[in-house]
Image (tube, rainbow, N blue to C red; front, side, top):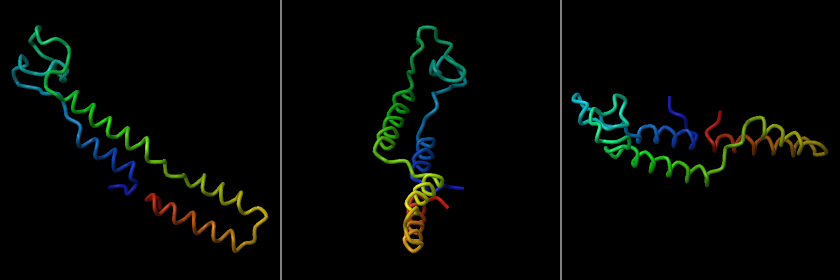
Length: 111
């Protein structure tokens, strides 16, 4: 099931975008950072298939998004806020705050 929370969607997209290091049946041609490594001792230890560079770009894009996209408020935070605002207010104002909290939750994809 796919979440409608933007942060979860970005995480799912990042998972799809990440690449595995190249592995070949003849491990001489495999990337040194692949699961099986490379039989070529001259290949060194660094990635030579481009996956490390590609995945670093994916991670940078995700980090930029998360830096600018605020966390969705939790149910507990909204209830606490509504409870604090309720003290001293009439019940009709509390109902307005509760409706606003529901709208915020819907906007962030929470149920």
